[in-house]
Length: 186
Image (cartoon, rainbow, N blue to C red; front, side):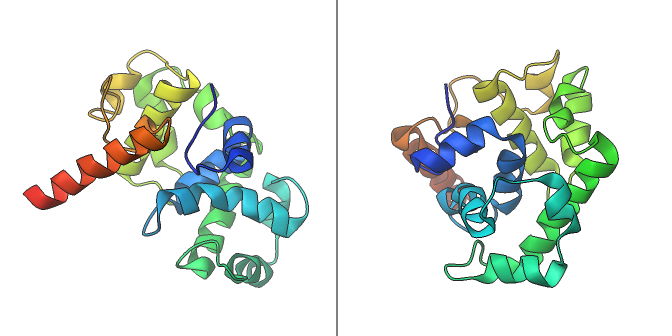
Protein backbone atom coordinates (compact mmCIF):
# COMPACT_ATOMS: atom_id res chain seq x y z
CA UNK A 1 0.00 0.00 0.00
CA UNK A 2 1.41 3.36 -0.95
CA UNK A 3 0.79 6.85 0.31
CA UNK A 4 -1.59 9.17 -1.58
CA UNK A 5 -0.85 12.53 -0.02
CA UNK A 6 0.24 14.63 -3.00
CA UNK A 7 -2.20 12.96 -5.41
CA UNK A 8 0.71 12.82 -7.92
CA UNK A 9 1.83 9.24 -8.59
CA UNK A 10 5.59 9.92 -8.76
CA UNK A 11 5.56 12.18 -5.71
CA UNK A 12 3.51 9.71 -3.68
CA UNK A 13 5.84 6.87 -4.70
CA UNK A 14 8.79 8.91 -3.40
CA UNK A 15 6.97 9.60 -0.12
CA UNK A 16 6.20 5.90 0.25
CA UNK A 17 9.74 4.72 -0.43
CA UNK A 18 11.96 7.50 0.94
CA UNK A 19 11.65 8.27 4.67
CA UNK A 20 13.53 11.54 4.23
CA UNK A 21 11.06 12.68 1.56
CA UNK A 22 8.17 11.84 3.89
CA UNK A 23 9.71 13.81 6.76
CA UNK A 24 10.39 16.79 4.49
CA UNK A 25 6.81 16.70 3.19
CA UNK A 26 5.50 16.68 6.75
CA UNK A 27 7.77 19.59 7.71
CA UNK A 28 6.39 21.58 4.77
CA UNK A 29 2.77 20.72 5.59
CA UNK A 30 1.79 24.02 7.15
CA UNK A 31 0.13 27.11 5.73
CA UNK A 32 -0.06 25.62 2.22
CA UNK A 33 -2.33 22.97 0.68
CA UNK A 34 -1.25 19.52 1.82
CA UNK A 35 -0.92 18.24 -1.75
CA UNK A 36 1.59 20.97 -2.49
CA UNK A 37 3.55 20.24 0.70
CA UNK A 38 3.81 16.54 -0.04
CA UNK A 39 4.63 17.08 -3.71
CA UNK A 40 7.53 19.39 -2.76
CA UNK A 41 10.08 16.63 -1.97
CA UNK A 42 9.61 15.22 -5.47
CA UNK A 43 9.96 18.68 -6.98
CA UNK A 44 13.09 19.19 -4.87
CA UNK A 45 14.66 16.03 -6.34
CA UNK A 46 13.98 17.39 -9.82
CA UNK A 47 15.57 20.74 -8.95
CA UNK A 48 18.60 19.06 -7.38
CA UNK A 49 18.91 16.58 -10.24
CA UNK A 50 19.34 13.68 -7.82
CA UNK A 51 17.67 11.80 -5.00
CA UNK A 52 17.37 13.40 -1.58
CA UNK A 53 20.47 12.93 0.54
CA UNK A 54 20.68 13.86 4.22
CA UNK A 55 24.41 14.59 4.07
CA UNK A 56 24.16 16.79 0.97
CA UNK A 57 21.15 18.73 2.24
CA UNK A 58 22.77 19.25 5.65
CA UNK A 59 25.95 20.59 4.01
CA UNK A 60 24.25 22.70 1.33
CA UNK A 61 25.03 26.40 1.23
CA UNK A 62 21.98 27.85 3.05
CA UNK A 63 21.52 30.71 0.56
CA UNK A 64 21.72 28.34 -2.39
CA UNK A 65 19.21 25.95 -0.83
CA UNK A 66 16.92 28.91 -0.13
CA UNK A 67 17.26 29.89 -3.78
CA UNK A 68 16.31 26.37 -4.88
CA UNK A 69 13.23 26.48 -2.64
CA UNK A 70 12.34 29.94 -3.96
CA UNK A 71 12.54 29.09 -7.67
CA UNK A 72 9.08 29.49 -9.19
CA UNK A 73 6.84 27.88 -8.39
CA UNK A 74 8.24 28.13 -4.88
CA UNK A 75 8.25 24.92 -2.85
CA UNK A 76 6.48 26.70 0.00
CA UNK A 77 4.78 29.97 0.84
CA UNK A 78 7.84 30.74 2.99
CA UNK A 79 10.63 29.16 0.93
CA UNK A 80 13.61 30.66 2.76
CA UNK A 81 12.52 29.71 6.25
CA UNK A 82 11.39 26.26 5.11
CA UNK A 83 14.72 25.61 3.37
CA UNK A 84 16.41 26.40 6.71
CA UNK A 85 14.02 24.11 8.55
CA UNK A 86 14.65 21.25 6.12
CA UNK A 87 18.39 21.78 6.51
CA UNK A 88 18.01 21.74 10.31
CA UNK A 89 16.04 18.51 10.01
CA UNK A 90 18.82 16.93 7.96
CA UNK A 91 21.47 18.06 10.42
CA UNK A 92 19.53 16.60 13.33
CA UNK A 93 19.09 13.33 11.41
CA UNK A 94 22.85 13.21 10.89
CA UNK A 95 23.69 14.04 14.50
CA UNK A 96 21.07 11.86 16.19
CA UNK A 97 20.37 9.03 13.74
CA UNK A 98 23.52 8.66 11.64
CA UNK A 99 21.68 10.15 8.68
CA UNK A 100 19.02 7.41 8.64
CA UNK A 101 15.64 9.18 8.50
CA UNK A 102 13.70 5.97 9.15
CA UNK A 103 15.62 5.48 12.40
CA UNK A 104 13.38 8.16 13.90
CA UNK A 105 10.69 5.47 14.02
CA UNK A 106 12.59 2.18 13.73
CA UNK A 107 14.50 2.83 16.97
CA UNK A 108 11.42 3.61 19.06
CA UNK A 109 10.52 0.85 21.49
CA UNK A 110 7.02 2.16 22.21
CA UNK A 111 4.54 4.82 21.17
CA UNK A 112 5.67 7.33 23.78
CA UNK A 113 9.28 7.14 22.63
CA UNK A 114 8.19 7.38 19.00
CA UNK A 115 6.18 10.51 19.76
CA UNK A 116 9.11 12.04 21.69
CA UNK A 117 11.52 11.36 18.83
CA UNK A 118 9.19 12.80 16.21
CA UNK A 119 8.34 15.83 18.37
CA UNK A 120 12.07 16.59 18.72
CA UNK A 121 12.39 17.14 14.95
CA UNK A 122 12.54 20.73 13.64
CA UNK A 123 9.11 21.88 12.53
CA UNK A 124 7.19 19.26 14.51
CA UNK A 125 5.04 20.62 17.29
CA UNK A 126 2.96 18.34 19.51
CA UNK A 127 -0.03 18.08 17.17
CA UNK A 128 2.06 17.56 14.03
CA UNK A 129 4.11 14.90 15.84
CA UNK A 130 0.91 13.07 16.83
CA UNK A 131 -0.40 13.26 13.27
CA UNK A 132 2.88 11.89 11.91
CA UNK A 133 2.87 9.01 14.42
CA UNK A 134 -0.70 8.25 13.34
CA UNK A 135 0.36 8.34 9.68
CA UNK A 136 3.20 5.93 10.39
CA UNK A 137 0.89 3.55 12.24
CA UNK A 138 -2.15 3.70 10.00
CA UNK A 139 -0.43 3.67 6.63
CA UNK A 140 3.13 2.38 7.02
CA UNK A 141 2.73 -0.34 9.63
CA UNK A 142 4.89 1.39 12.26
CA UNK A 143 2.99 0.19 15.31
CA UNK A 144 5.14 -0.05 18.44
CA UNK A 145 3.18 -0.82 21.61
CA UNK A 146 1.06 2.15 22.66
CA UNK A 147 1.30 4.05 19.38
CA UNK A 148 -2.44 4.76 19.16
CA UNK A 149 -2.54 6.11 22.71
CA UNK A 150 0.55 8.25 22.09
CA UNK A 151 -0.99 9.95 19.07
CA UNK A 152 -4.58 10.19 20.30
CA UNK A 153 -6.98 11.24 18.91
CA UNK A 154 -5.29 10.95 15.49
CA UNK A 155 -4.67 7.20 15.76
CA UNK A 156 -8.37 6.45 16.10
CA UNK A 157 -9.58 3.84 13.60
CA UNK A 158 -11.90 4.87 10.77
CA UNK A 159 -11.50 8.58 11.44
CA UNK A 160 -10.89 11.42 9.00
CA UNK A 161 -9.02 13.94 11.17
CA UNK A 162 -5.70 14.48 9.40
CA UNK A 163 -3.24 13.50 6.67
CA UNK A 164 -2.88 10.21 8.55
CA UNK A 165 -6.31 9.29 7.18
CA UNK A 166 -5.81 10.28 3.54
CA UNK A 167 -5.65 7.23 1.30
CA UNK A 168 -7.55 8.57 -1.71
CA UNK A 169 -9.14 11.75 -3.10
CA UNK A 170 -12.38 10.75 -1.34
CA UNK A 171 -10.74 10.38 2.06
CA UNK A 172 -8.90 13.69 1.49
CA UNK A 173 -12.29 15.35 0.99
CA UNK A 174 -13.60 13.76 4.20
CA UNK A 175 -10.60 15.13 6.11
CA UNK A 176 -11.23 18.59 4.64
CA UNK A 177 -14.92 18.38 5.59
CA UNK A 178 -13.94 17.42 9.15
CA UNK A 179 -11.59 20.41 9.39
CA UNK A 180 -14.30 22.74 8.05
CA UNK A 181 -16.66 21.45 10.74
CA UNK A 182 -14.08 22.18 13.44
CA UNK A 183 -13.58 25.72 12.15
CA UNK A 184 -17.32 26.31 12.00
CA UNK A 185 -17.72 25.09 15.60
CA UNK A 186 -14.92 27.37 16.75
